[in-house]
Length: 181
Image (cartoon, rainbow, N blue to C red; front, side):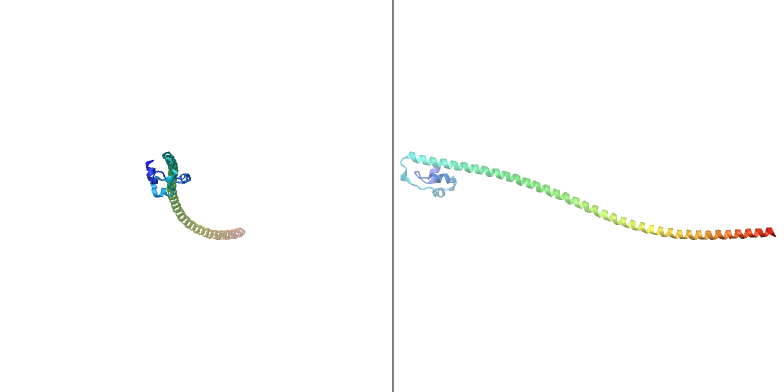
């Protein structure tokens, strides 16, 4: 009560009720800031009891305002704790995201290496296929040459067979002549 009296200036000061209801009371805000809401009217108080009633009402209003401040401060603390939790969760999610990105980058690097290896294998396979195609073409050419040689040999064989047949006929004819002679 003494601090409040010192803060508002002097005993007997009139404090309007609506000012008390609307005033966010801060004891540390200083006498000047509090005085702008209050108007001293010493002559309106007829007794010491009336002054005490006004001061008690003022103090009760200040206590209510202080309780409201504590409530707001509690809500602020709760919100700050929630904000800290959200920041921690965001930090954790960011860390997990970075790890996932690192894993994805490693997978991409691995896929790139596998692709390059597969490309090299494909080039080697193409080269092998080209060599095999050349070998097949050479084999086909050799087979064609062999077929032509075989056909020529068959012609020669037929010619020789025909020649042998004609000689056999000649020999038979000669034998018949010899028998006749």
